[in-house]
Length: 166
Image (tube, rainbow, N blue to C red; front, top):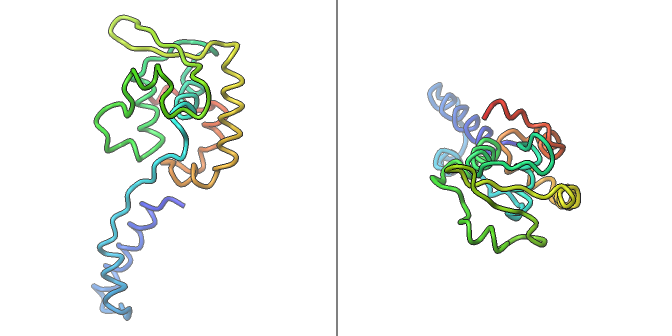
């Protein structure tokens, strides 16, 4: 269920009913929905699995380097929680140290021109992706609730995002 869309639909319906004097609900119920603020839910994934999800979808081949800017765009496109943030949510020292990661840090960072890039070595990528999929399976409902397009969950998990839209 997309909470933001559902809330908007409820508010519009209440306003329409109120305009037609067809609203027979107690005022406190009407006020509750009209004043409801829906904040997107944070993805229930630790940073390493969010990054792995982005890499799985953005890397043209396993192990390829991907600019952090593309990863950030991917996260914002798929998780509304990140829309309100003006900058990448983790600083580079946190990422390099593996702070708040669920597992060991398997990412490698570098620089390509002005871009900071990251990748997972091919020999470690499949293990990381398998761990990520297992974690998502355990938290499927929460992950679905955090997505902009809930029906896209298994396309994203399987690396079927269309990067041409970035």
